[in-house]
Each structure stands twice: as C-alpha cells, then as structure tokens.
Amino acid sequence: MKNRSVRATGYIAVALLVVAALRFTPELPDNHRAADVLQQGAPSGSPAALVQRASRTERLNRGETLIGLLKRAGVTDGAAKEVIRAATASAVDARYLKAGMPVEFTADSAGEEPSEMVFHLGVDRLLHMRRSGTSWTSREERLPWKTDTVSVGGTIHANLYQAMDSSAAAFFPGHGKDELAWALADIFEYRVDMSRDLQEGDGFRALVERSVGPGGVTRVSKVLAATFTLSGTDVSAIRFDSRTASAGYYDAEGKSLRAQFLRAPLEFRRISSTFGSRFHPILGRWKDHKGTDYAASMGTPVRAIGDAVVLRAGWAGGYGNMLELRHRNGFVTRYGHLRGFAAGVRAGARVSIAQTVAYVGTTGRSTGPHLHFEVLVGGVQRDSRVALRSTAGEPLGSSERGAFQAHRERMLASLNSTSGVVRLAAR
Ligand SMILES: [Zn+2]
Image (cartoon, rainbow, N blue to C red):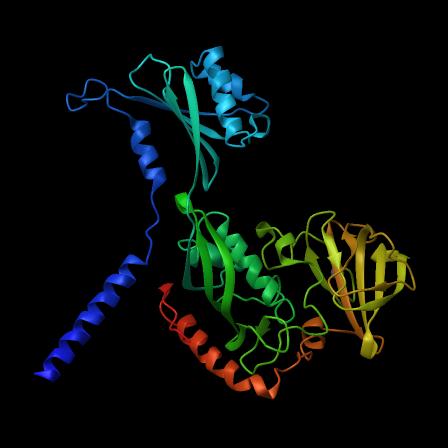
C-alpha cells in the first residue's frame, strides 16, 4: 500500500516535470505569418469575407521622409502629423528610419484612411500605431529571439563557403552560414589556413549555439566545439571556460589553440567566396617561386602572422612593395606585391600578431592583385604549411584536466550526433 502510493507520487512528479518542461520551451510567435495573412486581406468577391479589412504594405524609399510615405499611402496631412507625434512618444525618431523599412497599413474598409499601421523598425522590433477617431497612439513590441544548439557538418567541395552552402544552410540560412564559416576560421586560425589547407573531400562538424530571431533570422551565438578532418586527421577545438586562463578553445589534448603564429596572413572573412581555395590560374608565376600566393581584392588588409620587428618595408624588384618581419626563433616572413604599408610600419618598428601591416596590391612582377607570402627559417624559404605547423599552444593546468576531459567527452558526443537540434545533457 505504502509502496504503491510512493510509486503513484513518483509518476505524478514525473508527469509534472514533463508538463513543466513542455511549458518552459517557449515557441517562437510567428508574427510574420500573421502579417502575411493580414496582407493577403480578404479576397475581393469572396463570399466568406465577412469583414472587408483592406491591408497593404509600403516600403520607405531611399531619401523619402515618413510624411512622404504616409501621403503615398493615402494618409492626410493632419493625420500624418498625429502619427509622427505618436511615434515620437514611443521614442522613435521619424528622421532616422531605415530606407526599405516596411510599413503595413490596415483600413476598416477599402478606400478609407488607415486605422492601424505597423512599422517594422527592425527584425525584432515593431511599432504598432492605432487610430481612435482622429488621434493616434503607439505601442512598441519586441519580438523574442530563441536560443538553441545545433550540430552541423559537411564535406568540403571547392572551399569552406561552398561546404556551408551544401550542409549548414538549412540551420544557418542567409548570412548565417557566412557567419559560421568566419567563426570557424577565427577559431582555427592558429591551426588551419581555411583558404589553403582544405581539400576536396575533407570534412567538418560544428556544435553551435545559435540565436533564431523572428522571421527565421539566424545568428551564430557561439561555437561550442568543432572538428575539421583534414586528409583523415582530426583537428578539434573545444570551448572551455578555464578558471586560470580566459575562456578559449582547446584541442582534444587540452592544449590552447592559440599559438605563436597565425596560419594565414589574410583574414579568411576578407577573402571572397568567389576566390575559392585554389590559386587563380591567370596570375603569372615567376621562376623559382618559393612562396604562397593568396588571391584577394586590391586593398585587402595583410596581417602580421606573429609578433615581430620590421626588417624592411620598401621596394624590392620583382616583389614590388615588400615587407619583411623578423620573429623569434629565427623566423622571417615576407609579404610581396603590396599596394602599400600600414601607418607606422617601417624598419625597426614593432608589430603584434594579427596587426594590419600592409595592403594587397599588384606591384612588381605581378599580373593581378594577390599577396605573395614566404616563410624563411635560417634565411631559407620553407613551405609555410610545414614551418608553421610545429607551433603548439599552452596546455591547461593539471588541476583542470579532469574537468576539461569530462567537458570534452560531452561536447564531442553532441558534436558527432546526427545533424540537427541537440539537447545538451546537464553537467
Ligand atoms: Zn607568389
């Protein structure tokens, strides 16, 4: 008897937890769907249309004032001034509205002056205007963003941008997939040169916390873990809030991804998707070419791949405008065909890792804008992929190893699950 009541209490508790869990998973209100229905309005001549409310949407033209838009929508001068007064009461400055902003107008029946307006101030911000007689009132509405975690992955075809198109686009529509590509390139910038190291058939997986806004706008909130499989070898990055170091990314062995050198002198987000991963074939190659060429637009910032002292910054024959940096341990990096140098970059100056030191150009023996990059060790040109690979970051302290390993297992399990929304297990 007592046993049964304990069991019953248990069932009730579980049921309550399930109900609570369902209740605390807020659904995104689909305001845009509601707006779409409104815009369709009542089909003319439809017998089912009891209320003939008429709706239409106008967009603010470039250079147009709000008064201009309101007049275009059939609002009288007096009413337009009332509308602007009411909008100002909601702290909306009619002088600073974005061109292209949609405004929905609804009238009680066709041909009448609107009685309601909705200004789409931003993807998550609406201003509702309502008329009562001749006076207007306004109410601002903030649309909620939802946070979730997704696991995505894909195979490299041509370049990282195209891998995103084919695999992550469903979870990161629109601009979101570029944001994800850039976030991954930033995380791995000490280990992988995203414009050169990826080969056809390589793969990636990423566990990403994302923000989904009204209307499906998706942003990368943070990458929790990611793995690139390059020619069969995994390179992982796991975000970990260390107690002793700042939050950062660590590889599977618990070593910081930060290292002495960046793997590429150009920031991946500055390289257009149209350049691809292969060097552009129309650019001429000179004899005894011992460097790496990066195709990029004229003026793209060139960054120092490590802390250094400037050895020389000036004209050097076939190299055109050339920059040489001396790093620790006998490393020298050379950047050629530059359009020019950043302010303060001259022989003897100190520069920091990732600092903009010059700009891509096509000076010297060059047939199109590109950066010629060399790594010299002991005065001899070396393959930068080999020369820069050896640099490993600081390992986590021994007191944090256990916590990191448990966290790593949790993250990698979710990372390697099927693509889709992931529910992370509690710590
Ligand atoms: Zn070159």
